[in-house]
Amino acid sequence: MNSIKFETHYRRKNGEAQLYAVVVKNHARLRYATPVMVKADEWDRKRQRFTVDRISDNGKRSKLQKIRQAIENYLLAVDFGEAVFSTEAMNVFVDEQTGRRRRVETLGDLIKRYSEEVMANRINKRTGVAVCESTKRKFKYLIQRVEEYQAETNKPLLLLDLDTRFFELLREWLTKRYAPNTIWGKFLKPIKYILKYADEELGYKVNPAYKKYSLTYQKVHHVLLYKSEVQRLIGLDLSNNRKLEDYQIELLFGIFTGARPSDFTEFTKDNISVSPSGEPAIVFYTKKTKDRVSIPIPEQLQKILERRGYELPKTSKNLIARNFKKICHLAGLDRKEQIGRTRAGEFHVTKGLLYQFVDGKTPKRTFVNGHYYGYLGEKWNVWQIADFTGNDEKIIRDHYIEKLSELEVESAKYDL
Image (cartoon, rainbow, N blue to C red):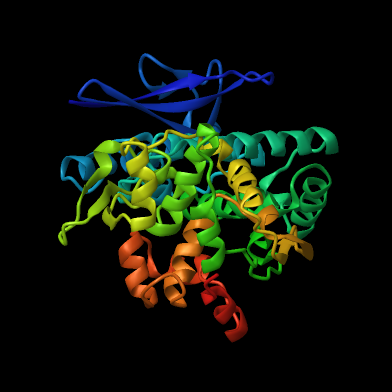
């Protein structure tokens, strides 16, 4: 049984209140905020009608009739399986049928609403991908930064005011306070995406200038390890430091299996199986792609695991980069390197020693390039690497393969 009733909500200082449509279907309730504002004596809640005549209702009566008809059409679509029964779905459906374009007052309000939709897993529900903790943290910090900026500038960030100048001022403000290399990916790009969603999906009135703003980026050069450097890591004896040896094993797992830190930090003895060829192998489902991967354990890694009774370490993902740097330092990986990266739209070059630039993705990057250029085993093409690691081919090509010169490839193959 379906019912549609209109009720007043949140009376304002001027004495007017907004009418909400309360929709009930099979004991489940949804609410739709109409654009109709009424005074205390203009709406009879019990009889569901205006108390004023048609001449003085300023077209409010016809607006409610259109909204009621649109809601009835929506409920009919739900009955026929053409729509889902949810607040967001009803809002979109009714707005389209009545030609309504919504407006959110501030950017902060919009981000909060969008994040609520993501947390409820509505936006990406079609993909079946669950919202991870990192996504939740991203929205938390994004809302905090926007509110800080709004408080310091003492000016509400209205959606119709967000032009390219706003993005540039926000970029400058963020650059002075936070890590410049995270500004585009963690703040500016998500804001553009959310504005696009509000503009195209929700029908909010948004300044179209957001589409034109962008930062010029050059691809970051990441470090990777050569064959001789991998051999130094294998030969490094850390048996007197059990904790550091745990991270040494994780580092080698990443180099020889191409697994992500989110995967290899959670390997246990149960992940060890036997490959079709009869060799020990790591079998696991990747956290990111949910693919099943079976990777033979190289002989060098087997020796370390045999000494430990194949008990795999449990390490912290938050401490990986720090300990990987420490291990590479102890192994003497001090080849001179320079990293070029774009930070907040400006390209910078940093010079240093190899171990200083090692991070959590260095092992996988070494695996990918080691097979792509053939200095850590059989030479593979991008598709073979993608199939082996469970990644998309474009991800491997754009984010993991480094452009090495012939001289660098020959140096990478050099065996001490």
